[in-house]
Length: 138
Image 1 (cartoon, rainbow, N blue to C red):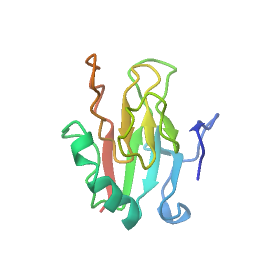
Image 2 (cartoon, rainbow, N blue to C red):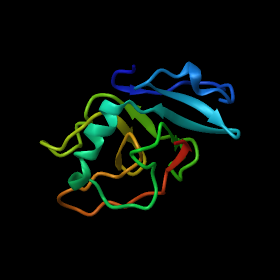
Image 3 (cartoon, rainbow, N blue to C red):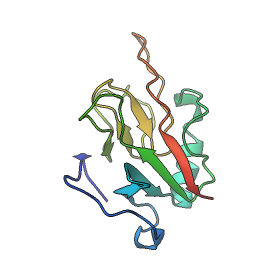
């Protein structure tokens, strides 16, 4: 749906009906007045993400892989800086790690998959960041 780093400027309508979001698509919306990235996960995306487990930090946050629609807050902990959706693997992602689209925190450098799980990095420790996911539908 998007290529590279994508951000939608300006206000977004509150999302009350998910039918306009196609299977496999990610879009910036408002849920309960907060800006979130909403992904309607396809079975193919869920299958790919399940194979990524060894590349992820184990977190209690994020959406379950079985969820149909996942919402990821744009908040990064720094005013005016929002989580960005990217389709292409970020250059800072360690070579060889699997990628199927996801999110980058431009403030901390953390990288998350489509359901909000943080990638494990080799080298200097990086902060885990804030818990960013939540199911909207199962």
